[in-house]
Length: 120
Image (cartoon, rainbow, N blue to C red; front, side):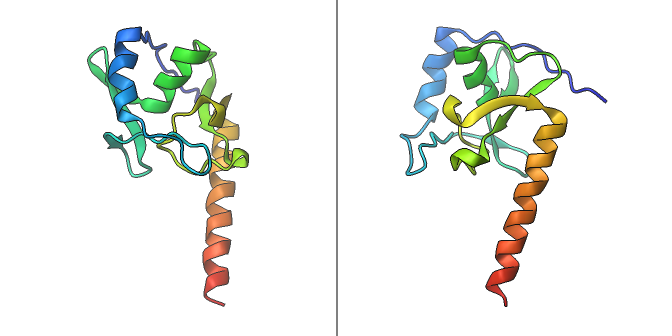
């Protein structure tokens, strides 16, 4: 089933509220969201036009424009970004939901293998 998100309208005034909630880049270049998170995965959340939206989507749509229909914003694990709180657009890209899920499960499997190797 396709995922449908409303396009966000992000203004300069919204970003003036957004940036104080973002930390300086860490050793991986991630700029982490420091305010509220949503869900068990810990994605940053931001109040925009009266509703909570994911902070990395706000960053993407402000700098890169609308997310094309049928695509989602994904964190680029290959760039060393492992945090769902990262809002740096250099660590984000638009992909299909299927690719997003494939990457998620690959990362979970890699973490599980790493944890198991610690117990051997």
